[in-house]
Length: 109
Length: 109
Image (tube, rainbow over all chains, first blue to last red; front, top):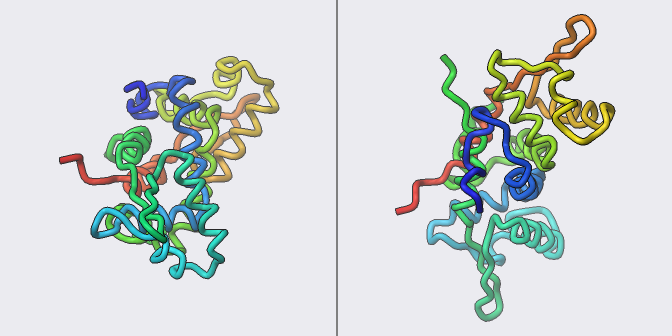
């Protein structure tokens, strides 16, 4: 991804190309369940977490959780790897850093 | 807003209440035009920008730009103030800091 993605949006106008690349990631974050799922994945102690540990944490069906996980994966926010019966998820920290950098504003004075 | 909103999501699971509050802000950012609009507002030299300076920057109709600006305002990302003929927009930096803090991950090692 072009480095222009990571200039804070408070410094200069986000180029259209960077906006087109980053908006889908923000859109994927725009759901409370997906925010919590991503958080559980990103904070997993071993760096990854089994879908079998994610699903019971919500009062939602397996297919609904799978749908949210697919959305996170398609937005480039997580990687998924099947090992045996289960799928394991891992956060893609590079894009999280890019999104955080984009939203950075100078400290309040 | 509860301070639990600002613990990085890579440190611990985002509480459901914080996720419910912050997800709509991410959703509002999930559109390339809105990302660019917010960036133009946040990077305005005087700290605010007239809608009359925003609209010509896009190949979109006035009502479409107004719709996107309303979405940003309803998500708490910008403030709007009418003065005379025009509406002036200003970024709400507090929520941008909260969103950036939430997405913060440790530097790559």
